Amino acid sequence: MDFVQPGTSISSLLDNPDPSRGHQPSIVCIGHPSGAAQQYLIVAKSDKIAVPLGDEGLTCAIDKLFKMYWVCNLKYPVQLQSVFSFLEHIYEFPISVNKRSKVIELISKLQAIS
Image (cartoon, rainbow, N blue to C red; front, side, top):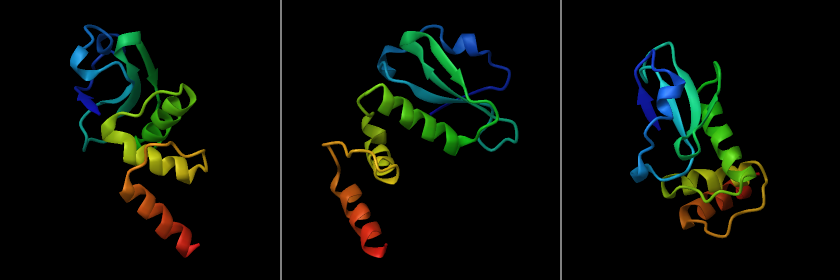
């Protein structure tokens, strides 16, 4: 997730894509992380696409980013593989092949309690 200063225009977020960040969509927060006024967006800089999420919070932003990856059949970023694999279980989606052992262990424990 990237944070940018309040007042940053959405169009400026799409200028000059950073090749080191890859080509995958990510979450951008306009505003300070601990501030009251924040706006979240899903940004795909390489495709010059920004999806404003209105007044929805970080949880909703992560949920929508996950669903975008799922629907578009995009490979999960390494940093989000465990979280997105867990969300696959929560939503009862067919599970991806590449699951980390900690995710499998957590899912097994949750199934044992229910």
